[in-house]
Length: 134
Image (cartoon, rainbow, N blue to C red; front, side, top):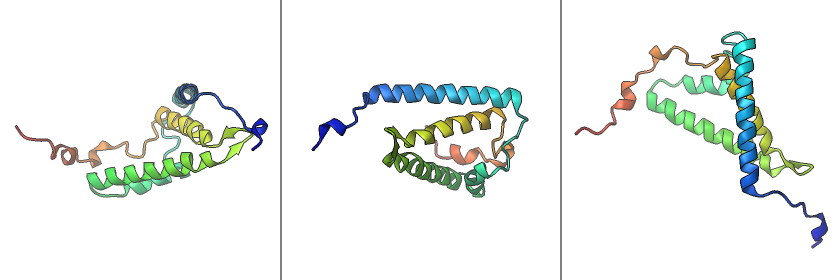
């Protein structure tokens, strides 16, 4: 085994903190750009929200929670775990998923482009029914 070609990396704790800081910085910057420079609802109906429209098509509260959970787990596996198998000059491509996610979540929140802006369609009592009674 040739140890001279092994790429040494920084500690995991340092990389996690730097990536978290980069995520927060990009997300807040994208929020400010979306809030001040883009029109409200800028991303509503865009192809970026195709997954969210599939989740919103469910009819009950719990099916929507379950499909949201499954969609997020699928995106996590596809975007972060699978992309981390590939590197470009020592840079894991899984980081790109988090960077793109930070920018897109900031722009969606900044432009108020949430798919379900009308909350009258959601029955809040579905989630309250499971509370224990005294």
